[in-house]
Length: 479
Image (tube, rainbow, N blue to C red; front, side):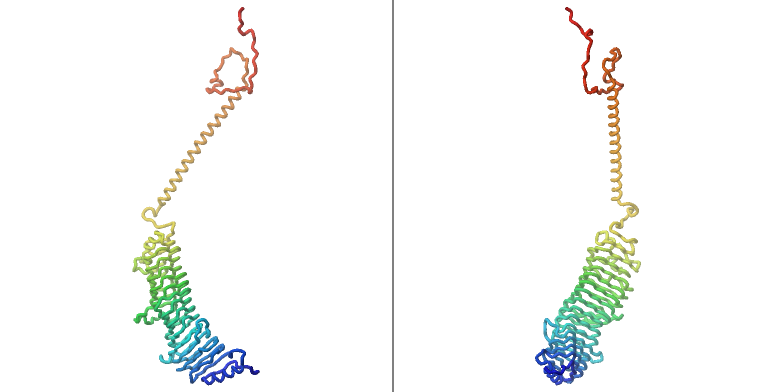
């Protein structure tokens, strides 16, 4: 290994430069390991460029690359590849199904170039991120999975084999994904153009469609026809779906069937929203949308946790805005701006147990409806219900029976006490009677003693003493 320090980076403009610089690097590093440099700058090359195997560098910067081939298929590690003004050119990345040998590719080409000049072809699949700005027609032929895709004002960004991406973000980008089926998160903003998705996309976490710039753009549908509507082929959103800042447009998601957490539609003007196959949603909120008719097309909605609609409500369905509804566990809040929306269908659904709580300020109802206060007809609205009257009647009957039982008990109790007192009085009188009293005195019968008609024999002192009788009074036998 040479004692002189190895080069930290170098500039390349031809294949000969690559040969010379890497020969010097190998001599410098010897057998220590693959030659490493901090940077490689490629500026306006005149020939195709192919880097040797085991290329190891932090950054490769390419400018002014036109009608040529840049081959990095043998690279061992490139943290970032920055490409600017890459016209009618081809890029070859490493092939590796498991490693992102090239961490990120950033492509920025001028919109001033002609359509032919803006053609870019990319081969290989060993990269984790593709970031593209300013309008190239780019086709990435071999990539099947990416951590991140970001496109800004790109003409067409095509991924013929891509099936899965974690972060998909477009700022006025135009995508073609014939095989894409899963995206963890997707965001489409600013002059939005719907992604061309021949098969339905599942967004496992969050989806955002925001700010179409207040203009209507024409785009090709899958069948080749031209439309000015924004039609998206998205099947489900796992967490949150936000539609915001849309002007003078129609947002259509014909194949969307479920939103796991919340669907928010807000801050839009003069726009129409259609979710004709949406069946399940956590929270549905549509508010602050100017003159946009709500809720749009929700004919298939069956289940929701709660619903809030604030704005002009579409009356074409005669108030039957959720014809397929089976259950809203929480509340449905309808704040209408127009005075011809009839709430009676929603009231009927609430009374049938399909809606937990209902608040609707349209016609046929003036107060929020709660489960314990369902609307009634006729005189029942002005008084108590039949069940309430029945409860009152039962209560009165129980009170009367209880009062009668109390009076009977009191009568029997006091009569028993009186009898006990009479017995005690009789016993007291009998205790003062003595034997040997004047026998000439009139005698009372036992039943008339002391003026009482009852007979209560009393045993005096509990003993019977012998009585001494005068013998002269006894009869005697005559001899």
